[in-house]
Length: 265
Image 1 (cartoon, rainbow, N blue to C red):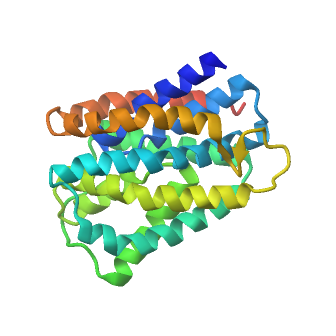
Image 2 (image 1 turned 120 degrees about the vertical axis):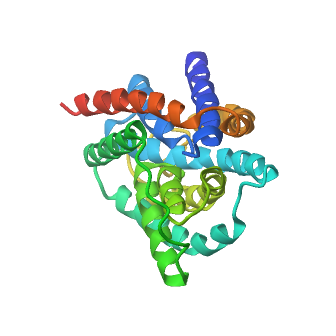
Image 3 (image 1 turned 180 degrees about the horizontal axis):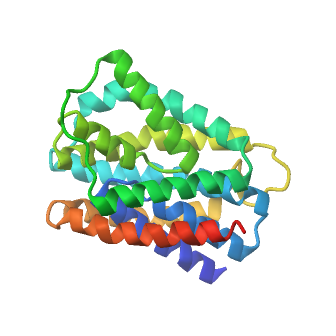
């Protein structure tokens, strides 16, 4: 149990730094590491990915709060964008958690692996949308928020890998896009956690210490560390060459995705 607690604390520390530094919410790291940890603990195979996704989103609640507060102090959060995109985010996220609950662990793993390869390629190649337009109107931003929320919920992330490119495309400066993405991660995390709790409630075969698909020991360990390290990551984002760090991180994502892919066979 002590070793498991140390593992979750370490995951939380890394997730917090990544949330602040790269605006990714940490889920890209938390989900696969939780999946591997659940395998190591011998938790039910058929629920491992659902629990990893639900627990990841629950941890992002606290991570996003610590991260966006740090970014807001630096004037890097566009609250007008946050307010306009949140309704779509909530609807899409609830839909995504409902869909994920009806997928098998194998299918969820394939979806997550594909998403990891996509994000890693985007980071490694430095692919960025050209800032060719402005933030869309009510209908457009609701649609964008719904898609971002749905995908984010299915892969258990705070949405930064989708919201940052979207805002960059809409002529929002990169550091402001990252800061705003950290704030948008909060409604994604709240709605996603609610969705995974409700859709996992009463499911047979879940281990002790779960609320729906949220595994409480992992949640507490990761939160305890991530809240402390997220502000540090936000400060680093304003002083380090983030583009270079993303390429290094992309290589790690390729390795993690490949390991998860091989575990399917």
